[in-house]
Figure 1 (cartoon, one colour):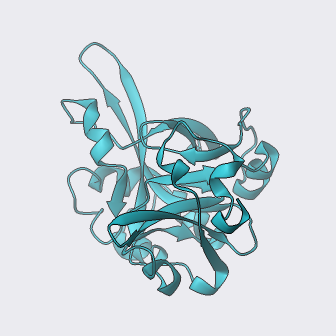
Figure 2 (figure 1 turned 60 degrees about the vertical axis):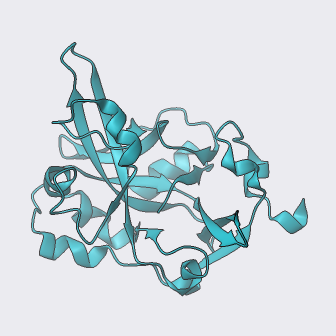
Length: 223
């Protein structure tokens, strides 16, 4: 599961790494939580565009948009077949820029948060799906979910799932709206090599979405 992540790098770096021409002013985020707007890269008119969507996918057929809080993640192994995700898996895939994410480890009856990132500390793309929902009153919500996969050995010490981190050479294929064959897409969705990542415990203050500052990602032994 992935329930919190970060994106604190300058907007221009996001634009360069993800091939986006224009990027809105993005403030550093150290504790992005479900239900909040977050930047997503998708194709629009054949070009990569960065837009702000709500985290927690609301299927187009949903009667109540609150269902999005239950759909913040989608299992990559079955997303192409699940009613909530299958249409988006075929036609509405996206990149979710991030530079780290949190997972919680069970330790003697309590949950210890860990921060995970690339050893290089470079931003990366989480694999995502997006959807558009319109209510009877005309209200429109564009939302997204994060795809998850089995953990690599590093993450397995903390949690039994991890978000899919896409390799840069797979961005084009993942965004390609013409590619709708799950057999071509699913091989992109495995766990990232553990040797490329690092993890360390952080203060439980990250449990509160209101705490959104650099202290969230400080190692506990440095506080």
